[in-house]
Length: 373
Image 1 (tube, one colour):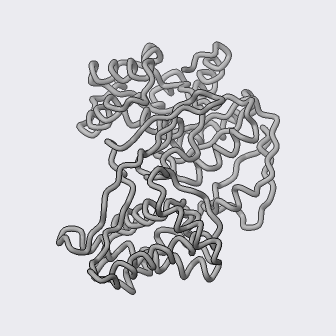
Image 2 (cartoon, rainbow, N blue to C red):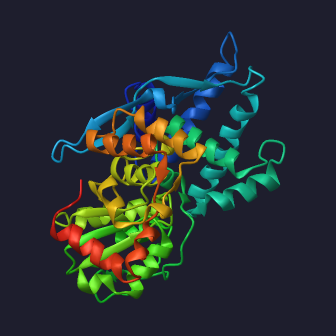
Image 3 (spheres, one colour):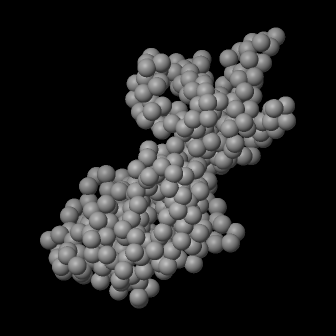
């Protein structure tokens, strides 16, 4: 324990760390204890004061882009600029207390060897600290504050993604083309310990569950030897973790994304490909080298003009955010410019104009022609 405290004291003095470590419970508890000791030391000094909580700044202005040494694929990182939570500022006092409340609960969870979801944590805090927690968003932001303070992953704090029903105890997944699919568990340790095997040649990431169901019904994975995966919209941690595991287990398989032709679809692809600033210090984790299969501007010739709809204000807001990002590669930027200049958007379902069985043919043709970017 003494060695852990020493290493944690060294950690708190190092201002260059700007990512979330995956740590064992004893190391996380040691970092929490050092945070408390630092707070008490300042409070008990000859000139007592309420110390500030130094947190890595999670604003987009503090993001940096770093490329992998082997792949050259860029990832999003946070730089070492700091922000603070202070008990002495009226607008930050509650946020200051929330950090300690969440850290206290996480300490208890780690001592007991348990795991909880963010939703479970919210209801616990709602009952024990109703004056400080009234919404799930407050809990989610505070968890990110604790991650930023301790610079360890949410999983290291004992917090897991919501389960999607993978059978507990299942240790092996056959990702062959004969599989009809599996739900994705929120337990990252379960996903990490899965034994995977496949005879697929591609991994296809689908934006929508309805499209996923259509591809499964048509058994597209028999026509195109592929693993098909969906997060039902913006990807959660569990789906990103599983895709990242697949990319490591099967590095020879191209990962291809099928998303709507609109800024939100591109944002979903970019989350898989580069990471998400919304994950704070875990922004870079689980990024994969995903290629854009479709829909793209060239595909608009395959669908009637009547199926195109106007971009919504939210679309334009997302487009502006993507355009301002230095991580967006040039051919993606050009696609986004076509979207915004035309003021139109197209959904994958528009391809059904050519028949309900057309989607598999569309995917197969683009794969054969290596028509992805």
